[in-house]
Length: 210
Image (cartoon, rainbow, N blue to C red; front, side, top):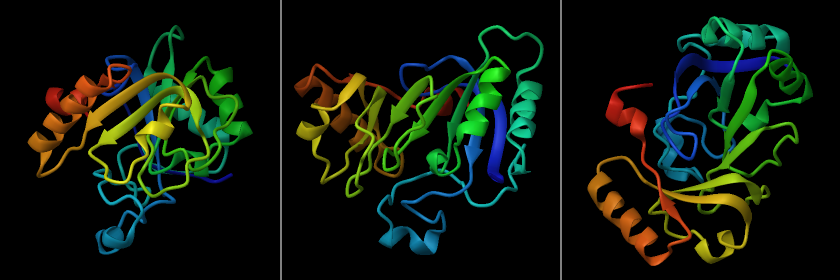
């Protein structure tokens, strides 16, 4: 596998159950629900993505022909100390590139591996913490994991079906954008109606983190 990485950086996890945790983020280029180019957004399955995952020109990005090279770059970013190493593989859609070699290389260097995926590709069995964020209109095949994070509102989402999926945590996150206030209120109302879900926010944006 020749790994195409848009960017890689050390930060704090800003969303979900792991929010506030120190982590190396590896953002892979490419997605199967949108090309990442504005001209294609209107016809994409996912039309609300606010992440740049096109190309390999971001900070820390590039092409890594060997899994160990990418894992070593993550170690360099983490810095001194091997305890509690945590890496988040995201995108785009990271499951397009995650393979046995990368999982093994990261584990060999002491990383716990978190993944944020849209759930349309079966997750690798070696992932330690799996977050699935389903997109309305997509065919989700990964219906189990650690946390389900539903960006809201998403018309067409089958919430009743999702509640039957096998996740430890069910989270609702307000959709960012021009209607952010409306989305926040809708997400709050969602959780008030369904107490088995919890509200999560993008704390990294509030704190000015990447």
